[in-house]
Image (cartoon, rainbow, N blue to C red; front, side, top):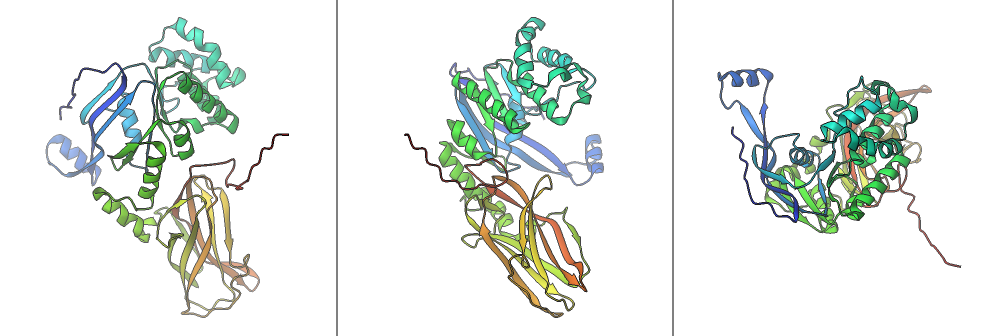
Length: 424
C-alpha cells in the first residue's frame, strides 16, 4: 500500500504537526497465513488492527505536551512514527527542529565497543561532527557518572550503567525537541533526580517536549497540555487535570464513548482479569472458583485510585474436610517482590473447621496506599494437616491491578504524612 504523505506549508510556530495519522498491522491466525499471503496464494486471511486510527496533534514550539492512555492505546507507536522509527500507514508528520528521543535507550550501541566509542558512534548517527561531540563529551561523562567503565566494552556493563550512559548521550546533545517515553525513571533514585532536573532545565530553556508517562504526578507537574489516547483513538486533549480525570474514568470503565463499549465489557468481566501466566497448584481439598476486585462503590474493576477503598473477593468450595483453613492474598510488583498481603490467621478472622461441600465468599476490605503502577494479586487456601503446613489451592499472579496516582512518594507505599513548616 502506498503511504499517504500530506504536504502542507509549515507554520513557524509549530514544532510537530500530526495529521490523520494511522498505523495498521495485519494480524494473522498462524505464521503460514502470513507466508501464503505474501506469495499471493491467499488474500485477506488476516485481521486489520489499527494501533493509531486518524490521530491529529499539533505541538507548538516551547510547549510541553503529555501523552497518556492505557497500555495498547498507541502512545509508543505515535512517538516512533514522529521520530522516524516507524512509517505510518496513512497521514502525515511534520517536524521542525532537531529531535532527541529517549525511547529505546542504547538501541544504537555496539556491545563490543567501549562507552567512549559508543558516544561518538551515537553522536555521528545523530548528525554531529567529531568536534561537536568533543565539546559535549565532558557533560556526557559527568552526567553518566560511570567512572573508568566508560573505557570498557559496553557488554561488560551492568544494566544500570548501560542506561545511564545511553541517557546521558541522548539528553546532552542540545536538541530543540525532546521526546521522552517513560525514560525518566531509569537508574537509581539519585540518577532519576538528575534526569528530572535536566528535564526541568529543558523546559525552562523553552525546549519543545513530548512526554509519555504513566506517572500522572509528573504529567500534572510539567505539561502545558495533555492528549488522551485509547485503543488508537484520540479521545480528548486539554488541561492536565481535566485529562487525568478523564483517564481515570477510562481506567474504571466509566468514560462515555461509543468506541469504549468493548473495553467496558472487559473491565466488567472478571474472567478477563485472569492471567494466562497464573501458577496454580494444591492438594485439592479446596478450590478457589472465583476472584475479583471491587472499588469503594462496589464496581468490579482492576483499576484503583490511590487512597481509595477497595475489596478483594474470592469464592472457595471445599472438596474435603479441612480443619481451620486459612484464606490469604498477596500483592507483588511486576518484578515479583511481595509488597504486602494478609490472611485470616493473621487477622484472627476465621478459625473454624469446614466440611466437604461447604462454600464460602471471602472478602478483604482495605485502603490502597501503594504507589501508582502495576501489581499482581495471588490467592491461597492453606492450613495445617497434622502440624504440617499444607496448600489446598493456590493461584499465584492470578490477576493484575493498576493503581492510579497523581502523587507518588518514596518506596512502595505512601505514609500519608501531614507536613507543617513553621517559621520561627
